[in-house]
Image (tube, rainbow, N blue to C red):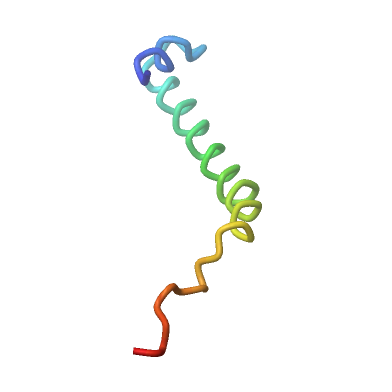
Length: 55
């Protein structure tokens, strides 16, 4: 998969391809951090435990 992405990056030089790949990774991380995770967080309730106090 990574080789396919590497081959389809538009630059010729390995340094330019690395810069584009880094920019794409940062953009994907920002998209997940600011859009996807805040949307999913209310649906997944981490603060409700499953252990009862009676016991």
